[in-house]
Length: 605
Image 1 (cartoon, rainbow, N blue to C red):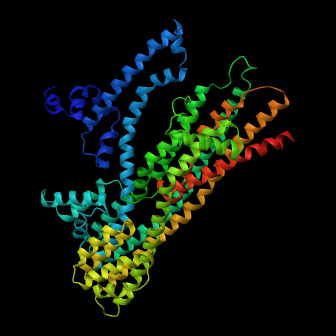
Image 2: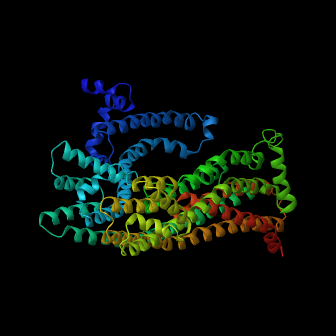
Image 3: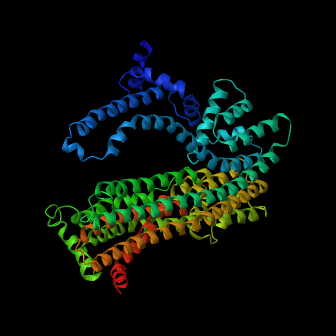
């Protein structure tokens, strides 16, 4: 125990390793893959310490699980009324808590490994283009990789380059052996094939430059094929998601609606309010969030994220909360809590006026209409910001490809690279033009090319444009900006644009699935409520439908909002793209609410 005590200190990891290694050791022996997964994922944590952390949480979960048994005995044997309100699912969940904790502990390293592999795959194509362009200027791949040590645009490769430097400079390993070691240690097949093939070509005396160029082209072709395959897989996942969130949810809605409308005529309820609450407010949102994560893992993504739309959304969050309190929760909570409060009463009165007087709907729609309006108004600034930023970014990336091709043609006339950039700054490349004009002015003032790039990097947020400009600057700064090097850069720039265009063309048609699913879901719920109301009217049964309508429509609004985020993630590879889709789907939902009285009239006729 001396070793465990000495490292425990006041850290959480040390505490777990010092006092729960007796649980961590058998866990590590049973799940041997944890150690390899942590190493491949780049997690700087001993496998024994991580297993001890799992043991700590497993110990806590076992205590919680066992504590549920006395409550179950009090409920079943002694019939305690308070415990009778809790469904059996709560007690069952407590019993299975240790299994869930253990499963999560084993799965988390695999998730981290998969995320790192996905990030590496997205970086390898651009790193291969960089190494190939440098090789045409006479720079070896090892030196090229070492120049990536401090490049934030390629974080995973930057870490790999630093490890190579330690192997060579500290451990005395030769560069080729360090490259082979790095290739075998990182979880990316493309990275491994690229570097191991280079080492093999170098050892056998082959043409390294030709190999790197052909291998880079192969990587880009494989990336195009992967994007097509990802589109097909995403289509299957979307069908599963829509089937569960629409067909499954609609079945639950039907059961709950029948249970509420006929509860006065049945001995027991078919579907309790508590079960419906768990499904609509917890299970359905959890399903959407889980699918968002799956889509993020499966889709190709870049190492950096443009946070500007999310910052706008975060800035609007206080206003959205205020709107939700006044327009949504005012109708769910007792009136004396928010409804008659001077700060929220005008918002509640506005929603009530729009719902009852303008839309001529039942008062049960107040909360749903108010929640829709609050989410639309609170999300609108972020949706506008994301749309404007996305259009600006696409314009910059498209202009970058044209600029590289024109730069090659101007360079063929014998003009220096710097002078060529100054000359092309006067041409129209869309949103990219103003940044090229800044570069041209700086070069005219004698500013070094690397300083010019730093200015460009600060002003441009597109990762594709920044990495492409970085490769160009490196090619000019190190390789001299020869025609062959720039030609290689232009070819790879066109490949990058082709990959982006193929990704957009593959993913955009998938947007129809969430839209169709949402329209079917909302329309079915509205028809269900109208049909139930008409049926009860024909049977001359008096049932208060206002509470039923409120229970059915309020969770529907948030479900539709999350479906919009899922649609945006699928169609645009980022959650912020879903802001506008969420707004559109909420507008469609409000239109569905407005059509409800007309549907009722149709059934009555």
